[in-house]
Length: 196
Image (tube, rainbow, N blue to C red; front, side):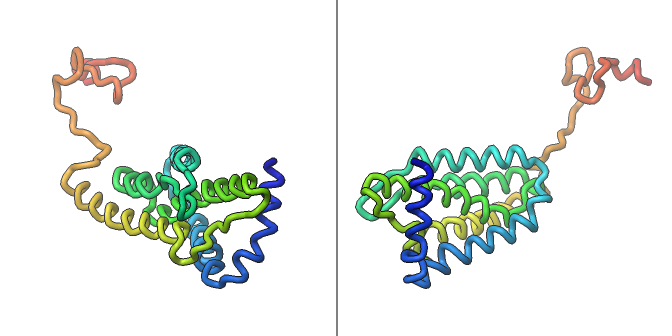
């Protein structure tokens, strides 16, 4: 079944995209090239790559389970539009803000391909176009909107971190821990008087 869905998709690509140049540029060439370039440039700067991949898996899964076919086409909840800008806000320099674009694009593309493949299976082989609306399609617009939100929230995060919010370092006053032992910085459990 999966191989027939893939063959249906690959067979319809030339007729679908090459006959409509705006669909070819808007949802195939431009987002794929931009996503590939941004991933290659910024992926090594991500501090917690496994966590980011987990959130990407969550965004794809959310899109797969919330999609439905309506009268105007495939509808899905693009979780990447919410997830990546918020992670840029919270993580700061641990997740570069330009990665919001490719991660949102991947999180939208996979459910879109799956939904179109399922429609092809339901309809007996007629494959709905993935990204057929070109520059008006969600594959083009949602990653741009997520990127804009990530830029705004990145600037807001920098502003708030200067004022002490979203800071990973904490100021610990004495007398906060039981018996005066801070086990985070002192695994032996010595009190401050015993260390001196």
